Image (cartoon, rainbow, N blue to C red; front, top):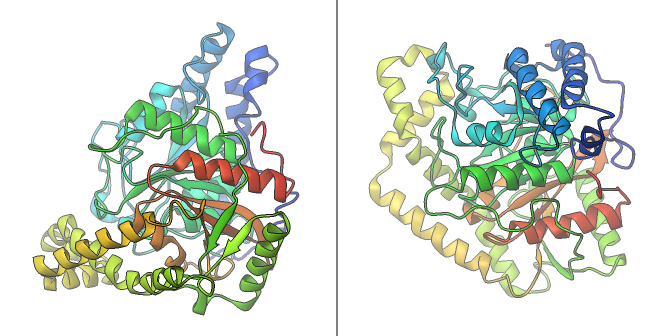
Length: 463
């Protein structure tokens, strides 16, 4: 493993990742172009990719062609969307017509459907420049890929959206897609110092890729700025629609205006006991800053219903594990039947565990989840949202992708959740998580906009 340490310590007050939104006015007035913006991204990729290893496949010719077409549209005054010309990485669980989908496994070696998944199709229709496929873990949960953390190359970038988090955190690209069952969008964004919105369940079309626990999988974007995170999520959702039976994201096409939350519920979750003391201290200090700004913070000691909810969050760990194991029986059991030698021990262990589960086990878990979602939504009239952490520690040394515990509640609740890269420990990013209520993504993003801009003094107005 390359253990060279990156020289720049992470400081949330000074670090600036790539912003596409800030570049758009220059595209409009002709002082910059999408092709020139793309070439700057490619220059960074060529310089850093040998160390970061964020991409499994690059299609620079295809990205250049898309950027050239976008440049001509801006010159003609006819951009296709808010994303026209944006260089984007695609997590290698989504199908692309021009690149293979490997899902981190030799089972998929050389596989290409020749079609785009829904999210990729929407990005192309919006005029984005698809630059490549980003590394993921084996079947998006098992053996880690080779990607390194951009802030310390001896540490993990998290998983399973490993390459997406690292590519954005390294300023290679302004945005990349992610997917999550447990914490696979939130945790890589937190470890790599990026923004993310894990959208409400079903709000961004997940069809066209590897089928990972369909009742729990969420799609989202990891981005260098809050504005790029939102415009990518909203634009793609409106073009590709939501999953069948679910509407697209509501709200404006551009970043919602800042809206100060009046009351937030702080959550410890099942992760608090495992969280390092310096991480806890940084979070508590941040909550004090919010209280000083006039936001009411309430927790388990203040309300017996919050205490009951916290106890649910401990039980939730076993429930989510059961569901993803049961729903993963297909196609993993099929791969085990045909090519067991191509699977890691962890995948084969999950297959074996899935074979032991019964339909009754699954039905009981689904009933628990339905009741939990109702309990979560019952807080909607009592607070603007929930605030917690996204990690128990700074990104761990080595390649294990870290603990997903803080990402699990929002996946079961189906609610929107954000990573806000507002803190740091040991010179590494530390993410604050905001959770909202189902299909109210734009409202919690507006709250996040206020926190980032007003409390930390980070200018998000133009990206």
